[in-house]
Image (tube, rainbow, N blue to C red; front, side):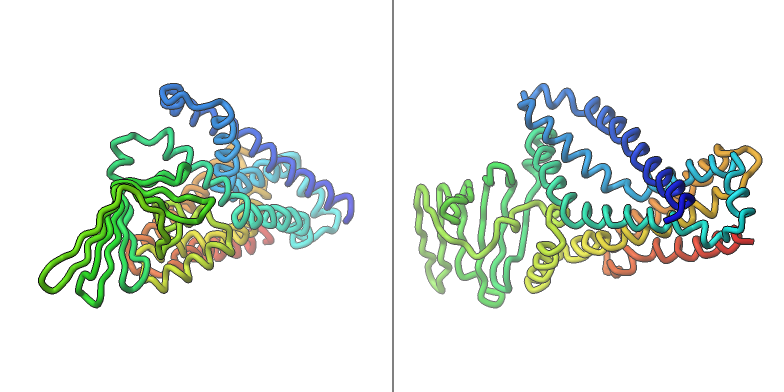
Length: 357
Protein backbone atom coordinates (compact mmCIF):
# COMPACT_ATOMS: atom_id res chain seq x y z
CA UNK A 1 0.00 0.00 0.00
CA UNK A 2 1.04 3.59 -0.63
CA UNK A 3 1.66 6.22 2.06
CA UNK A 4 -1.77 7.69 1.25
CA UNK A 5 -3.46 4.34 1.96
CA UNK A 6 -1.63 3.87 5.26
CA UNK A 7 -2.51 7.42 6.29
CA UNK A 8 -6.26 6.93 5.74
CA UNK A 9 -6.31 3.36 7.09
CA UNK A 10 -4.48 4.38 10.26
CA UNK A 11 -6.93 7.23 10.87
CA UNK A 12 -9.87 4.92 10.09
CA UNK A 13 -8.88 2.21 12.59
CA UNK A 14 -7.50 4.54 15.25
CA UNK A 15 -10.62 6.71 15.34
CA UNK A 16 -12.87 3.64 15.51
CA UNK A 17 -11.02 2.08 18.45
CA UNK A 18 -10.83 5.44 20.22
CA UNK A 19 -14.61 5.70 19.79
CA UNK A 20 -14.96 2.29 21.45
CA UNK A 21 -12.62 3.31 24.28
CA UNK A 22 -14.66 6.49 24.77
CA UNK A 23 -18.18 5.06 24.78
CA UNK A 24 -17.69 1.66 26.44
CA UNK A 25 -16.53 3.15 29.78
CA UNK A 26 -19.52 5.52 29.59
CA UNK A 27 -21.81 2.52 29.03
CA UNK A 28 -20.23 0.65 31.96
CA UNK A 29 -20.56 3.70 34.23
CA UNK A 30 -24.24 4.21 33.37
CA UNK A 31 -24.98 0.48 33.80
CA UNK A 32 -23.13 0.33 37.12
CA UNK A 33 -24.99 3.41 38.40
CA UNK A 34 -28.30 1.65 37.61
CA UNK A 35 -27.31 -1.75 39.04
CA UNK A 36 -25.10 -0.86 42.03
CA UNK A 37 -27.98 -1.05 44.56
CA UNK A 38 -28.93 -4.60 43.58
CA UNK A 39 -25.28 -5.69 43.37
CA UNK A 40 -24.71 -4.50 46.94
CA UNK A 41 -28.08 -5.82 48.13
CA UNK A 42 -27.32 -9.32 46.80
CA UNK A 43 -23.70 -9.19 48.04
CA UNK A 44 -22.35 -10.22 44.65
CA UNK A 45 -18.70 -11.40 44.80
CA UNK A 46 -16.25 -8.90 43.31
CA UNK A 47 -14.85 -11.40 40.77
CA UNK A 48 -18.36 -12.06 39.44
CA UNK A 49 -18.96 -8.32 39.02
CA UNK A 50 -15.67 -8.02 37.09
CA UNK A 51 -16.58 -11.01 34.89
CA UNK A 52 -20.03 -9.47 34.29
CA UNK A 53 -18.55 -6.19 33.04
CA UNK A 54 -16.08 -7.99 30.79
CA UNK A 55 -19.08 -9.78 29.25
CA UNK A 56 -21.00 -6.49 29.21
CA UNK A 57 -18.17 -4.82 27.26
CA UNK A 58 -18.21 -7.49 24.55
CA UNK A 59 -22.03 -7.56 24.50
CA UNK A 60 -22.26 -3.74 24.31
CA UNK A 61 -19.56 -3.49 21.61
CA UNK A 62 -21.26 -6.15 19.46
CA UNK A 63 -24.61 -4.39 19.79
CA UNK A 64 -23.34 -0.97 18.68
CA UNK A 65 -20.41 -1.98 16.44
CA UNK A 66 -21.79 -0.50 13.17
CA UNK A 67 -22.87 2.76 14.80
CA UNK A 68 -19.48 3.33 16.42
CA UNK A 69 -17.87 2.74 13.04
CA UNK A 70 -20.30 5.03 11.24
CA UNK A 71 -19.75 7.97 13.60
CA UNK A 72 -15.97 7.48 13.71
CA UNK A 73 -15.72 7.54 9.88
CA UNK A 74 -17.83 10.71 9.73
CA UNK A 75 -15.65 12.26 12.44
CA UNK A 76 -12.24 11.76 10.86
CA UNK A 77 -13.40 12.23 7.23
CA UNK A 78 -15.00 15.55 8.21
CA UNK A 79 -11.68 16.61 9.74
CA UNK A 80 -9.94 15.72 6.46
CA UNK A 81 -12.51 17.76 4.53
CA UNK A 82 -12.26 20.77 6.87
CA UNK A 83 -8.48 20.75 6.55
CA UNK A 84 -8.89 20.59 2.73
CA UNK A 85 -6.84 17.37 2.72
CA UNK A 86 -9.45 15.61 0.56
CA UNK A 87 -9.26 18.40 -2.01
CA UNK A 88 -5.47 18.01 -2.01
CA UNK A 89 -5.73 14.24 -2.53
CA UNK A 90 -8.17 14.57 -5.42
CA UNK A 91 -6.17 17.43 -6.99
CA UNK A 92 -3.05 15.23 -7.03
CA UNK A 93 -4.75 12.90 -9.51
CA UNK A 94 -6.36 10.40 -7.10
CA UNK A 95 -9.90 9.56 -8.22
CA UNK A 96 -12.74 9.42 -5.70
CA UNK A 97 -13.00 5.66 -6.29
CA UNK A 98 -9.27 5.29 -5.53
CA UNK A 99 -9.78 7.51 -2.47
CA UNK A 100 -12.25 4.92 -1.14
CA UNK A 101 -9.74 2.01 -1.32
CA UNK A 102 -8.23 2.41 2.21
CA UNK A 103 -11.75 2.82 3.60
CA UNK A 104 -12.72 -0.54 2.09
CA UNK A 105 -9.56 -2.14 3.49
CA UNK A 106 -10.46 -0.78 6.93
CA UNK A 107 -14.07 -1.92 6.52
CA UNK A 108 -12.85 -5.43 5.65
CA UNK A 109 -10.77 -5.56 8.85
CA UNK A 110 -13.65 -4.30 10.99
CA UNK A 111 -16.17 -6.58 9.23
CA UNK A 112 -13.93 -9.59 9.93
CA UNK A 113 -13.80 -8.62 13.60
CA UNK A 114 -17.58 -8.16 13.62
CA UNK A 115 -17.99 -11.62 12.07
CA UNK A 116 -15.80 -13.29 14.70
CA UNK A 117 -17.41 -11.27 17.47
CA UNK A 118 -20.98 -12.08 16.45
CA UNK A 119 -20.42 -15.75 15.69
CA UNK A 120 -18.11 -16.86 18.49
CA UNK A 121 -17.16 -14.27 21.13
CA UNK A 122 -20.44 -12.41 21.69
CA UNK A 123 -22.53 -15.58 22.33
CA UNK A 124 -20.29 -16.58 25.21
CA UNK A 125 -20.37 -13.04 26.59
CA UNK A 126 -24.14 -12.93 26.17
CA UNK A 127 -24.47 -16.15 28.16
CA UNK A 128 -22.49 -14.73 31.08
CA UNK A 129 -24.27 -11.37 30.83
CA UNK A 130 -27.75 -12.95 30.92
CA UNK A 131 -26.89 -15.48 33.64
CA UNK A 132 -25.65 -12.69 35.90
CA UNK A 133 -28.73 -10.59 35.12
CA UNK A 134 -31.16 -13.42 35.92
CA UNK A 135 -29.26 -14.47 39.04
CA UNK A 136 -28.65 -11.09 40.70
CA UNK A 137 -30.45 -8.24 38.94
CA UNK A 138 -33.92 -9.47 38.07
CA UNK A 139 -36.75 -8.74 40.46
CA UNK A 140 -37.58 -11.95 42.33
CA UNK A 141 -41.30 -11.65 41.58
CA UNK A 142 -40.56 -11.31 37.88
CA UNK A 143 -38.41 -14.46 37.90
CA UNK A 144 -41.20 -16.52 39.53
CA UNK A 145 -43.61 -15.64 36.77
CA UNK A 146 -41.05 -16.31 34.05
CA UNK A 147 -42.49 -19.67 32.97
CA UNK A 148 -40.96 -21.86 30.28
CA UNK A 149 -43.28 -23.92 28.10
CA UNK A 150 -41.83 -26.03 25.31
CA UNK A 151 -42.96 -28.71 22.88
CA UNK A 152 -39.96 -31.07 22.85
CA UNK A 153 -41.30 -33.51 20.22
CA UNK A 154 -44.55 -34.46 18.52
CA UNK A 155 -45.97 -36.09 21.65
CA UNK A 156 -44.41 -34.35 24.66
CA UNK A 157 -44.57 -30.94 26.32
CA UNK A 158 -42.63 -29.59 29.29
CA UNK A 159 -43.33 -26.75 31.69
CA UNK A 160 -41.05 -25.15 34.31
CA UNK A 161 -42.15 -22.15 36.35
CA UNK A 162 -38.55 -20.87 36.57
CA UNK A 163 -35.07 -22.17 35.86
CA UNK A 164 -31.63 -20.91 36.95
CA UNK A 165 -29.12 -21.58 34.17
CA UNK A 166 -26.20 -21.02 36.56
CA UNK A 167 -27.14 -23.62 39.20
CA UNK A 168 -29.12 -25.68 36.66
CA UNK A 169 -32.12 -25.86 39.01
CA UNK A 170 -35.79 -25.19 38.37
CA UNK A 171 -39.16 -25.34 40.15
CA UNK A 172 -42.57 -26.84 39.38
CA UNK A 173 -41.56 -29.13 36.52
CA UNK A 174 -44.19 -30.92 34.44
CA UNK A 175 -43.87 -33.28 31.48
CA UNK A 176 -46.99 -34.40 29.57
CA UNK A 177 -47.00 -37.25 27.04
CA UNK A 178 -49.83 -37.47 24.51
CA UNK A 179 -50.98 -40.12 22.07
CA UNK A 180 -52.70 -38.01 19.44
CA UNK A 181 -54.95 -35.71 21.49
CA UNK A 182 -55.15 -38.09 24.45
CA UNK A 183 -52.99 -37.65 27.55
CA UNK A 184 -51.18 -40.95 28.33
CA UNK A 185 -49.06 -39.98 31.33
CA UNK A 186 -47.91 -36.94 33.25
CA UNK A 187 -44.78 -36.37 35.34
CA UNK A 188 -44.70 -33.63 37.97
CA UNK A 189 -41.92 -32.60 40.36
CA UNK A 190 -41.62 -29.68 42.75
CA UNK A 191 -37.97 -29.21 41.70
CA UNK A 192 -35.70 -30.28 38.85
CA UNK A 193 -31.91 -30.20 38.77
CA UNK A 194 -29.50 -31.23 36.03
CA UNK A 195 -26.60 -33.37 37.31
CA UNK A 196 -23.89 -32.62 34.77
CA UNK A 197 -21.52 -35.30 36.08
CA UNK A 198 -23.98 -38.13 35.32
CA UNK A 199 -25.97 -36.36 32.55
CA UNK A 200 -29.25 -37.06 34.38
CA UNK A 201 -32.08 -34.97 35.82
CA UNK A 202 -32.82 -35.13 39.55
CA UNK A 203 -36.52 -34.73 40.32
CA UNK A 204 -37.74 -33.98 43.84
CA UNK A 205 -41.20 -35.04 45.05
CA UNK A 206 -41.65 -37.03 41.84
CA UNK A 207 -45.22 -37.89 40.77
CA UNK A 208 -45.94 -40.10 37.73
CA UNK A 209 -49.57 -40.41 36.73
CA UNK A 210 -50.67 -42.94 34.10
CA UNK A 211 -54.07 -42.13 32.60
CA UNK A 212 -56.16 -45.29 32.12
CA UNK A 213 -59.56 -45.92 30.60
CA UNK A 214 -61.20 -46.47 33.96
CA UNK A 215 -58.66 -45.63 36.64
CA UNK A 216 -55.42 -43.68 36.85
CA UNK A 217 -52.32 -45.15 38.48
CA UNK A 218 -49.94 -43.01 40.53
CA UNK A 219 -46.28 -43.49 41.40
CA UNK A 220 -44.63 -41.26 44.00
CA UNK A 221 -40.94 -40.99 44.94
CA UNK A 222 -39.21 -38.51 47.20
CA UNK A 223 -36.32 -38.20 44.75
CA UNK A 224 -35.33 -39.84 41.49
CA UNK A 225 -32.43 -39.47 39.04
CA UNK A 226 -33.60 -40.16 35.51
CA UNK A 227 -33.00 -39.53 31.83
CA UNK A 228 -35.51 -37.29 30.06
CA UNK A 229 -36.00 -36.73 26.33
CA UNK A 230 -34.92 -33.09 26.13
CA UNK A 231 -31.75 -31.00 26.36
CA UNK A 232 -30.77 -28.52 29.04
CA UNK A 233 -31.24 -25.75 26.43
CA UNK A 234 -34.97 -26.49 26.43
CA UNK A 235 -35.13 -25.16 29.99
CA UNK A 236 -33.41 -21.90 29.06
CA UNK A 237 -35.74 -18.89 28.73
CA UNK A 238 -36.38 -18.55 24.96
CA UNK A 239 -35.86 -14.78 25.01
CA UNK A 240 -32.09 -15.12 25.09
CA UNK A 241 -31.14 -18.75 24.35
CA UNK A 242 -30.30 -18.02 20.68
CA UNK A 243 -27.96 -15.18 21.65
CA UNK A 244 -25.79 -17.55 23.72
CA UNK A 245 -25.06 -20.01 20.89
CA UNK A 246 -22.22 -19.91 18.37
CA UNK A 247 -23.19 -19.97 14.69
CA UNK A 248 -22.80 -23.77 14.40
CA UNK A 249 -24.67 -24.43 17.63
CA UNK A 250 -27.41 -22.03 16.58
CA UNK A 251 -27.88 -23.73 13.18
CA UNK A 252 -28.25 -27.12 14.88
CA UNK A 253 -30.56 -25.64 17.50
CA UNK A 254 -32.85 -24.06 14.87
CA UNK A 255 -32.98 -27.29 12.89
CA UNK A 256 -34.01 -29.20 16.01
CA UNK A 257 -36.59 -26.59 17.03
CA UNK A 258 -38.13 -26.60 13.54
CA UNK A 259 -38.56 -30.37 13.78
CA UNK A 260 -40.34 -29.85 17.09
CA UNK A 261 -42.63 -27.14 15.74
CA UNK A 262 -41.36 -24.47 18.13
CA UNK A 263 -43.26 -21.18 18.15
CA UNK A 264 -40.03 -19.18 18.62
CA UNK A 265 -38.36 -20.12 15.31
CA UNK A 266 -38.61 -16.60 13.86
CA UNK A 267 -36.93 -15.15 16.96
CA UNK A 268 -34.02 -17.58 16.58
CA UNK A 269 -33.67 -16.96 12.84
CA UNK A 270 -33.52 -13.19 13.36
CA UNK A 271 -30.50 -13.73 15.64
CA UNK A 272 -28.93 -16.12 13.08
CA UNK A 273 -29.33 -13.78 10.09
CA UNK A 274 -28.07 -10.76 12.02
CA UNK A 275 -24.73 -12.50 12.50
CA UNK A 276 -24.28 -12.30 8.70
CA UNK A 277 -25.94 -8.94 8.06
CA UNK A 278 -23.81 -7.00 10.56
CA UNK A 279 -20.50 -7.33 8.62
CA UNK A 280 -22.28 -6.23 5.42
CA UNK A 281 -23.66 -3.20 7.27
CA UNK A 282 -20.06 -2.19 8.04
CA UNK A 283 -19.37 -1.63 4.30
CA UNK A 284 -22.70 0.11 3.66
CA UNK A 285 -22.34 2.52 6.58
CA UNK A 286 -18.71 3.24 5.66
CA UNK A 287 -19.76 4.30 2.14
CA UNK A 288 -22.58 6.49 3.49
CA UNK A 289 -20.28 8.08 6.08
CA UNK A 290 -17.59 8.93 3.49
CA UNK A 291 -20.13 10.26 0.98
CA UNK A 292 -21.76 12.48 3.61
CA UNK A 293 -18.61 13.87 5.20
CA UNK A 294 -16.11 14.14 2.33
CA UNK A 295 -17.51 17.50 1.20
CA UNK A 296 -16.64 20.62 3.18
CA UNK A 297 -19.88 22.22 4.38
CA UNK A 298 -20.85 25.46 6.07
CA UNK A 299 -21.17 24.54 9.74
CA UNK A 300 -18.28 22.07 9.49
CA UNK A 301 -18.04 18.81 11.36
CA UNK A 302 -21.07 19.51 13.56
CA UNK A 303 -23.45 19.45 10.58
CA UNK A 304 -21.98 16.17 9.32
CA UNK A 305 -22.18 14.55 12.75
CA UNK A 306 -25.77 15.72 13.24
CA UNK A 307 -26.72 14.31 9.84
CA UNK A 308 -24.86 11.09 10.66
CA UNK A 309 -26.66 10.68 13.99
CA UNK A 310 -30.03 11.12 12.23
CA UNK A 311 -29.13 8.43 9.67
CA UNK A 312 -27.87 6.15 12.47
CA UNK A 313 -31.14 6.54 14.41
CA UNK A 314 -33.18 5.76 11.29
CA UNK A 315 -31.05 2.64 10.70
CA UNK A 316 -31.59 1.47 14.30
CA UNK A 317 -35.33 2.21 13.97
CA UNK A 318 -35.62 0.08 10.80
CA UNK A 319 -33.56 -2.70 12.38
CA UNK A 320 -35.66 -2.84 15.56
CA UNK A 321 -39.07 -2.48 13.92
CA UNK A 322 -38.51 -5.18 11.30
CA UNK A 323 -36.86 -7.44 13.89
CA UNK A 324 -39.91 -7.20 16.18
CA UNK A 325 -42.25 -7.77 13.21
CA UNK A 326 -40.45 -11.01 12.37
CA UNK A 327 -40.35 -12.20 15.98
CA UNK A 328 -44.03 -11.60 16.70
CA UNK A 329 -45.68 -12.42 13.38
CA UNK A 330 -45.29 -14.55 10.25
CA UNK A 331 -43.16 -11.89 8.57
CA UNK A 332 -40.05 -13.44 6.98
CA UNK A 333 -36.99 -13.14 9.29
CA UNK A 334 -34.71 -13.10 6.22
CA UNK A 335 -36.47 -10.05 4.76
CA UNK A 336 -36.74 -8.38 8.18
CA UNK A 337 -33.00 -8.61 8.84
CA UNK A 338 -31.75 -7.74 5.36
CA UNK A 339 -34.31 -5.05 4.45
CA UNK A 340 -32.52 -2.22 6.38
CA UNK A 341 -29.25 -3.15 4.62
CA UNK A 342 -31.06 -3.18 1.26
CA UNK A 343 -32.59 0.28 1.81
CA UNK A 344 -29.38 1.78 3.14
CA UNK A 345 -27.40 0.07 0.38
CA UNK A 346 -29.48 1.98 -2.18
CA UNK A 347 -28.94 5.18 -0.16
CA UNK A 348 -25.18 4.50 -0.12
CA UNK A 349 -25.07 4.12 -3.92
CA UNK A 350 -27.08 7.34 -4.37
CA UNK A 351 -24.91 9.37 -1.99
CA UNK A 352 -21.71 7.96 -3.48
CA UNK A 353 -22.85 8.90 -6.99
CA UNK A 354 -23.53 12.47 -5.88
CA UNK A 355 -20.24 12.69 -3.97
CA UNK A 356 -18.29 11.68 -7.10
CA UNK A 357 -19.92 14.52 -9.02
